[in-house]
Length: 298
Figure 1: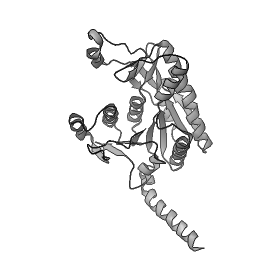
Figure 2: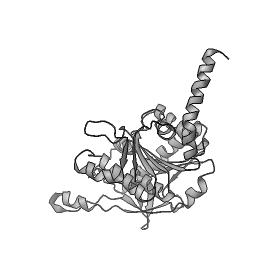
Figure 3: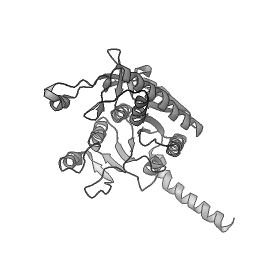
Figure 4: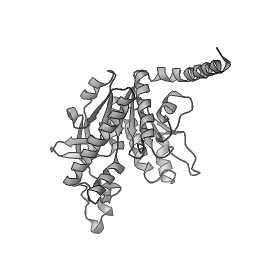
């Protein structure tokens, strides 16, 4: 064995020594990963992400992928000349828009992610909330919108939904069988209509129903930052209201941490917010001592 070969073998042994305890901790555990529309912006990121999911599954973890697709939906609506309107950060979704949303989310994006995972040696299966009545939706009611509306009139968001119920029957059949479910946040309501559900909310509901050990949000920011823009590596649920009140947590991070709290209340052990563009971010977070983002626990 040459000196270079010996050094390489030693480095690999050190990596394994660090990873093995974490792999044992997550053996047969469920990890739900929310893969955001911005995080899946290029093929390199998509392939790195896909390799991570395949490696997790091969290591005995049960990964469940929930994806968004806001930028891709916006691009398709733009191509078709359909103007998007937003209220309180949510896309007002009429019948025609909902058809495009479902086509992009449950069709193009979902199968693209499935294809990437399969090309990296995995066996992914693309599903949405409609399949097996996995998720029952209800029309989203946001009372806060009413007060913000002009002349006090309520704003109808159309076919924007919330999670009313999760049935894990289909996922229970898939998990543990060397399959990686990839879920689009589209679901049917009791009224028979199809609704678009915020992907963070959808992922939180799925993670809670499955009793996931971890829910991982891949975003376009490193995690929750303090007022000096430094990463906060660990947070307790009890810390969050104070950080919102003093302005440390603002803007789009507020609904994200609210979803983290929601998931933990439903039995998820911990939720991580991290930068999805960091190469192999999920592996670094789950299988090393360093972590890669903000871990929120009870």
